[in-house]
Length: 172
Image (cartoon, rainbow, N blue to C red):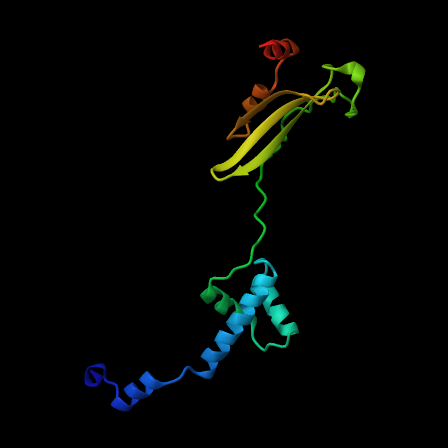
């Protein structure tokens, strides 16, 4: 076999009985320290922060070595997800008048006279779920709501009910 692989017998047996090198031993020790720091940070620290902690603790290693050992150990830091762009304003659209005049405080006399709408984005396993609600400002009751997988105008139109439709829905 040594002739076929063009390796001397001495090299074959030396490699077979050799102990791991100093670098491999140091990598194993460093991997243990990295895993400990990663666990202390509850899995949030990545290679740069773990390198900074190890440096403070006196370990001599480079950031790229820490990154390589983290990859080999299957460790990675958490990162914030990118914000999902949800609203794209139309510069050509006409501005709507503020009929409430920015007065969102409850007025018990004005039940069913001032309504406020809002849209909420809910991340799910299948993507974003959009929830549109219409709330009576005085009573804080939800007048109507609708959900969809898109953020188009018809979602908001589905959430709106007229007072007559609202009373009919309550009676049913």
